[in-house]
Length: 314
Image 1 (cartoon, helix red, strand yellow):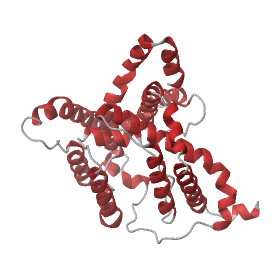
Image 2 (cartoon, helix red, strand yellow; image 1 turned 90 degrees about the horizontal axis):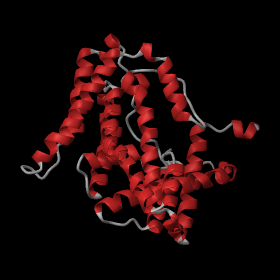
Image 3 (spheres, rainbow, N blue to C red; image 1 turned 90 degrees about the vertical axis):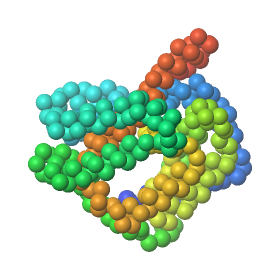
């Protein structure tokens, strides 16, 4: 007990990341990633649609400017909305107004402006980037956090610049967290592979499961030397990326370079950014995924079993 208490949460997380990397790399090398063949289109559809509702629910409090107690466990979505209902009198009207304006602008840009612009320019509109730049500037100038209690990145905490020095995970921690790292490694991979299959079916490509598992494992191994948490795919970020018109792996390279520049130099510039703006960007990107609820009718028409599997997974 005393030995475990001497480890910091960051050291434990780093050790878990290292173990997840070892597990995923090993499973990929022995080609067990191919077992994901059991992840059918029904499971992928229902899982991603269900996940989109979880993401939507997690952003509602930011759009309304509410501070809610953390809810976890079974029935989390229902309990979250009950909590939101109990705190509706505390809604920050300034935050709500900013969120609604951003949502309207994003939806109009995506549904009305972008299709017309495609006939003029082959490059997609950087709507989200422009919106972030404008709202960050306005927030700092108008002092939204101080004057109107609009929650900003700065209210969450200061954004430090620079990268942590590389360091090996604590060797004595590895056997203590290895068993608990197995489900983390499997779930992280299944989420990534599921999203890869979803977008692959939409755009006509496939994601080799063993190669993907080795890639995730190698990323976790390297990341563990820099105090990183275990990686996985993110539905909200993937949808934002898709809505931005990104189509190739060059996007990941550009994103990584920009993120590196933020970590090294630009982080403090984004501290006035209202959190509700990021929530609005995520909600606007979820519209297409939520529409996929209609997939249930397709699967039910194809097979009653498929329909029931969809409902249960959802």
